[in-house]
Length: 181
Image: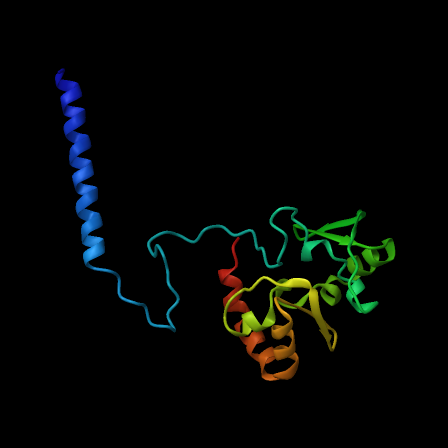
């Protein structure tokens, strides 16, 4: 056997032994649980990653905001309407679809009025400190804001417990930091 080949095999074996020892040490000394109030930081020595500012829930397969439902239609009838590809608007890196040209223009003029609160995430989850995806067919318009929910139970709880909205509003900025970017 050549000396270079032997040296490579020795280095490979040494690396495997080192990994094995590190793994055993990790299993023998599991990390202690962090306090509930502390925010875990996976790699504190690394700089923050640049973010794209994604604050709206969108379909990961299509890129459509609120799964392609027309955000204006929530205020016009009992059920939201699916948006159509010919009435599409890209705003703040999100693709919005609308059922009509009039709805598209209304949204373009006042997106803050029609876009769902909390980026389309379930406000009961936000009140609990987490971003929970919602089902755009489960909604409530309260005052002038649109809220989307994950389940009918969450919707009922939100409408019943008036303090949840204030709790969600107070935690939204912290939850926003945890949203995948």
